[in-house]
Amino acid sequence: MTTLKAKLQDDLTTAIRERNELHSSTLRLTLSAITNAEVAGKEARVLSDEEVLKVIAKEAKKRREAADAFAKGDRPEQAARETAEGEFLDTYLPKQLSDEELVEIVTQAVAEARAAGAEGPRAMGAVMKIVNPKVAGLAEGGRVAAVVKQQLL
Image 1 (cartoon, rainbow, N blue to C red):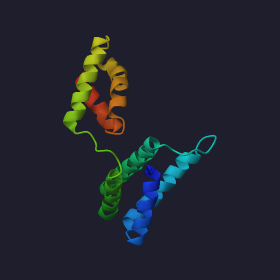
Image 2: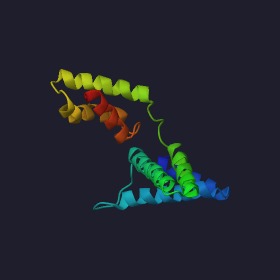
Image 3: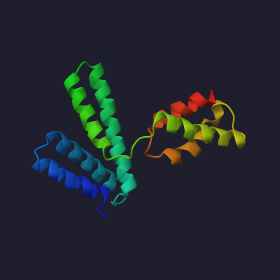
């Protein structure tokens, strides 16, 4: 079984061969972010596929934020490029939860937290502790927090 990092490197080689500038530059940046994560800290190590997914998710989020900033700054061509890069990176990530699936998971977690005695807005931490392991990598933190806040009010 090949690792996710090896798949990214193979895809980079393919993108270069096909002269696909968008994919090759996006993969180069992502692979360098992975390498930076591997050498960060006291000693170098190889990231697991889950850790590589987190790096890819972070890179995709950066692209979305940059696309928003470029759109607000009236730079549509840059915004379009960042959006395309983000969408390309999303193909490597697990399918995101739909709003309905996320609301269902949060509703169950709120019920669990209430059963344990946590009530109102102060229950946010308790609910997030229950929800986060279930949605890790499947929903962005900001999205999850917004749904939890909505249900606790």
